[in-house]
Length: 112
Image (cartoon, rainbow, N blue to C red; front, side, top):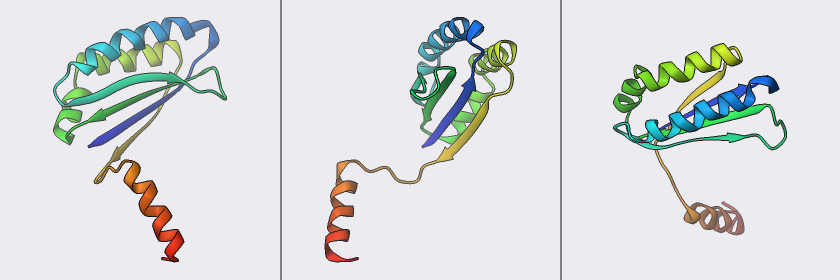
């Protein structure tokens, strides 16, 4: 799985316009092959910061998305309304749930 994080510091005058674009795009991106999730959020500490978070099943799926019209619209909107965004891509080899918390507690309790 690949996680995509895009952080955008938005000029307040353009915030509503970019939010509308991101909301429309998220729904379309979710329909792309291999998209596990796509959403955007506002940072609590910085109301001018928006974050786009996406999860992709495979690198091939992500590559297709990066060549898609949806991604071109996103990049165009960000450049037009704000300027460059901070993007990061993370390859995830393992995902755990609550069991990771329990395992960490057990290791700590046993001194490992």
